[in-house]
Length: 354
Image (cartoon, rainbow, N blue to C red; front, side, top):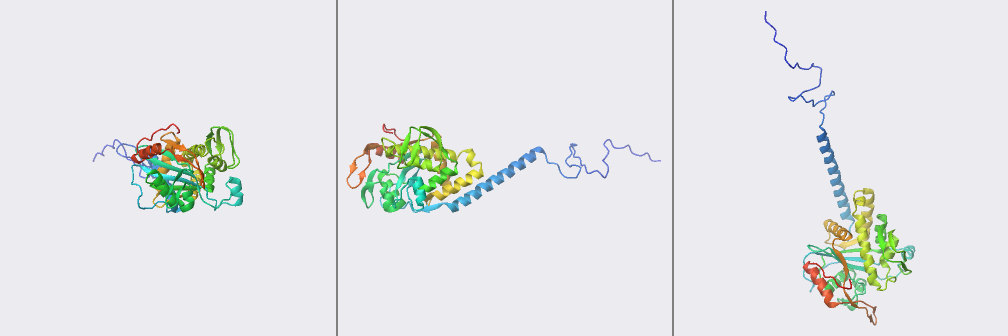
């Protein structure tokens, strides 16, 4: 009789079992026959899913934003245009147009009903290896306007819109502008309101019936209407428009800081209304793409956190010119030194008046 073989040391499981063993003995299938994923694999899949959602969200927002951006022919080639320097120059403009404002809005915002278009804010933003720098140009600066003789620089916008303003700034400063961005009254208010207001530290008590400014000294949250009044007030300062320039620089930094904070960027219900308000308010040159606008925002955020600096074109005098009114004359030598540094993308000089 044949002797039966000895039973195996590790017997096979019953045929009805769905549990499968690897050589290592680790079980990879559960009782229902499905593979069991390792914790690490689950984490990697979750991270991949989050990444896909974030990328899709960013791409979708980008595509939507590109379609919303308003364009204008602000920059053009012309004979005698300054040569390109180092770094990038943006011309940032706050327009006081009242075309789209109702009478009620004009009264609420204290902007009057003038039909002409001028600019309350004219700023050059420079960035590159040096900077970023915000250089404010007083709106009453007495300069040559191509084809129109000498006048206040903001009159160039009324005479020829963004294109003539850009050309006037280029010829007055010797800087070649790379991009142009403009925000109007109503748009500015909507942008600040979309952010839920911005934190501003008012240096002293302000009261101005012309702009509607009425603030006590100290840090406070301003809504859109209040922020516009703060940006337009020049009667509360002994140096008039120059005091307003500093307030405008302060507000720009506050808006950039709030807009690029994690509380805004990581919350779609906050970010999308802000982007919508910004794109409705913003007009840029035809060459400015989404990456350019993103870079603009990042540089403004750097300034809000103390990287870079803000300054104003050095002033020599503030005479009154017949037929023009009170104007601002630049300190020719100091202004030339400032613009030379910007063209070369080097550290800008510091002047006593700044």
